[in-house]
Image (cartoon, rainbow, N blue to C red; front, side, top):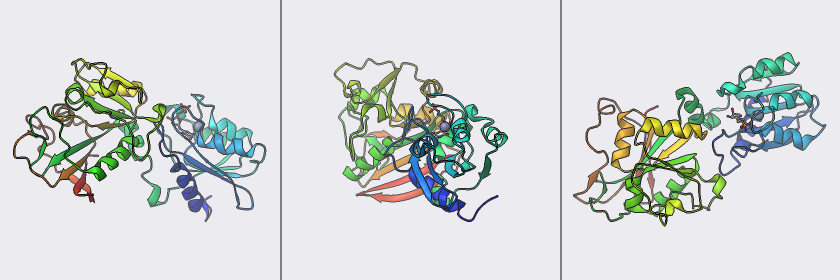
Length: 334
Ligand code: AOF
Ligand code: ZN
């Protein structure tokens, strides 16, 4: 049975999930335990791949004091022993009386979790998260639905739709504010994909450096696609983040390889060739476009050749904003 305060406490759990600056290759999960008198006695969150689950964090804080309490969590507790123990087993062992969660876990490993809790005498309520927090793990959920990583493509272009001036010279199109925002977008993705052509032309670092530099294990994986050799002194080969190479220039194979690494969210920061391939195979889920108030008259267009799959579709602009002196708009395909 739902209680009046359930939505409030789910909001508290959601706020917890938002505390870590980054959570890689796993969902954002927060939890709060409320005792019989209605007081929060422990709060906690999951910090990402391989670290303790939110439920384990709060139960560990409480030691033996969880008996008879209610646990609120934004994702249904897992019941598998993976990199961490089963949360359901821990919840039962510690004597939690009731579990309130807002989202089922789409991971097949979690199947049967709710039934298991109920069979062991735990009362379970499934309650919708307040609207404000609904989309916290949206891309992660969609990735399970699609059985592949969710792909966001980022593009910087001029007013006349050019991404470079056609020379091999590196050209900064957008301003500092957009650059900083792109680092935040990178931070929210498990991997950054680009082509060997872009690496050779621009020598990018493809890591997160603003507002602070992340440690290597929290950086998105750099995933470089193409058959051209990258010299050892190129920045993508530095120690700051993990780098993987894929010689096959096939978006489908790229996403399969990334899935093997448990990657769920991808940022495609490539040139026109790879982007066009992803678009034509309908493997871009969202475009983030920065348009700078400048025109260069000549250069390379955002797509290379003919766009087949997208040309007969309506684009839905899901948001528009001004970032410094650049216009940013998002196009959602899913
Ligand atoms: C929870 N609480 O805080 C999180 C859950 O590799 P493991 O053992 O860490 O398991 C990862 C899976 O567990 C992940 O894919 C998702 O299904 C679930 N995440 N579950 O009960 C948590 N982060
Ligand atoms: Zn768990």
